[in-house]
Length: 439
Image (cartoon, rainbow, N blue to C red):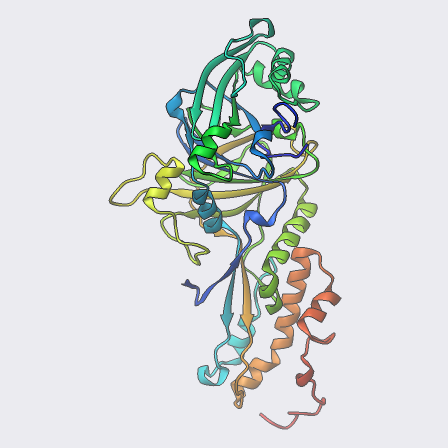
């Protein structure tokens, strides 16, 4: 079995047999597609209202797909919707960590003083079709509602005991992973219902989709949470969870797990530009090793009406409405604040569901990394000599920053930078007396 989205109980083989900014511009982004076993969830939240959008990374026959999600109430047909995956892809691209680049100006044209040259290097090292229509009272399971929404057949189930629910699921063609009954019992004690979806192959063929579109549900509950424990029932290793939380007020944060900002605004060597995806994967892995897997990282927090720099254009009013932002206005400003959270976790590090809260903090933050290209033109002036003199120190700082962020060895970083142990380029190595009597 293969794990599907981490906020869902996924049961495989179910049926039958089986821009310019900061004087620079955007270069690249580290998006959710860089990571394996990655679940993407959008949460639109205001007061007790929530719209949850769930994207699946399922690969395989649609006949071998279904999901079970705990929900706080029996959902009506109008509370369930199928979204276009392009909206989540745009949301991911807009909020992804990004790399920006700058080019040093001509030091002679700028008449760059020594003090300014030193200032440049002071960058911080940041760190069913066949499902029985009759409720089976003997199992304590009741089908509260049944809908077909797009290419999905939806059931809303209630149950009185977890063992009866797991037995019912198995008798109706589901392969329930070991350990699911214990987790289901926790949700039953909380009075939760269960949203069950499987692919209606006939409807999928009629609609012409070759992939699974995201499912959306809208509900009211005082609890602001994601039920991640069910997703660990058949996990085959650590999982990636991306949460895109949209609110009116401000930043969203977990209340039962530690929240850490991803390192940002760090200046890294130029060669990172050619391998930003590899850099960011290793950075996240290293930071998770340092902080532990019971940590939720904030990768982005920003007012969605603008961005600086922009990894992608802000979402349009129509896209926000598709996402479930019911308060979006046709004209005039709409308060929309986006928080991007990223966690890598396993059963031991995430023993509880992810509990969240909305804060009033509207401080802008983004996982932003900087490449600064050195001036390669003529440097025949006193300011140029001062500029050239500080380049080795700047390269050393960039290299040490990169090592601290990713855990890469300093020797390997120097090799990629093509510099010597003193961080000088081959053509910069001069005799000690050169320039001794010149000003």
